[in-house]
Image (cartoon, rainbow over all chains, first blue to last red; front, side):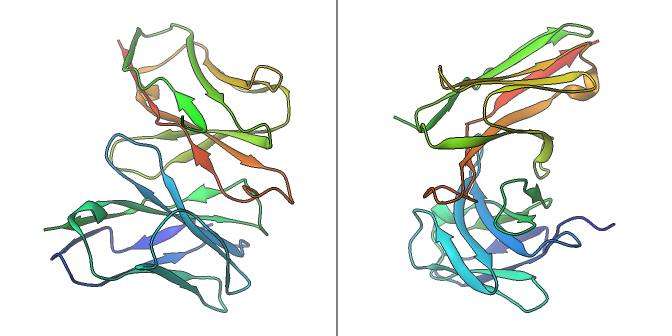
Amino acid sequence: DAGVTQSPTHLIKTRGQQVTLRCSPKSGHDTVSWYQQALGQGPQFIFQYYEEEERQRGNFPDRFSGHQFPNYSSELNVNALLLGDSALYLCASSFLVNTEAFFGQGTRLTVV
Amino acid sequence: QKEVEQDPGPLSVPEGAIVSLNCTYSNSAFQYFMWYRQYSRKGPELLMYTYSSGNKEDGRFTAQVDKSSKYISLFIRDSQPSDSATYLCAMSADAGGTSYGKLTFGQGTILTVHP
């Protein structure tokens, strides 16, 4: 059983560019959440998607947007990248809007 | 003040020791409590998942929740070098709460178990 998969694993972007990160949830899961983890910190909630709609959003600017597809996979888009956006971006999936969430290995984004 | 406080450590113990990891929280709406283990440059791995107060045991791991004190703990018995990782506590509110489905994490505690 494949767990949560994320792509790419590493990414280097230039300040001002745009980036798209992808996530495939664990088999049987229909809810996807995205988190940002800065070095030495716990993950911070960005937003959650269920039934192709954003259900909850954390304290992140509108530069962060997302999408969920009919097959439950999801994308995280970040526009106008800032140096401070450099972090590990984690995708978590669960069944329904549940808190027993399983994480992918993350995408490490470096903005230069 | 952060909603969830966790001592970042680092914590260093000899192999075989009992490890105690703790978090405190301020949001009384939290009902779901989790512990994750995160190895360097990897995603968090779910270790324990509990609802409301009480204890839960799984192998060498025991999770305790004391809602009256807003305090949760994870105990690791017979610790092994392979337990060396960052341990993250996470919490969420019940259905209907503003934090339902959203995990609020502690900062993480770095644990090293040396042979």
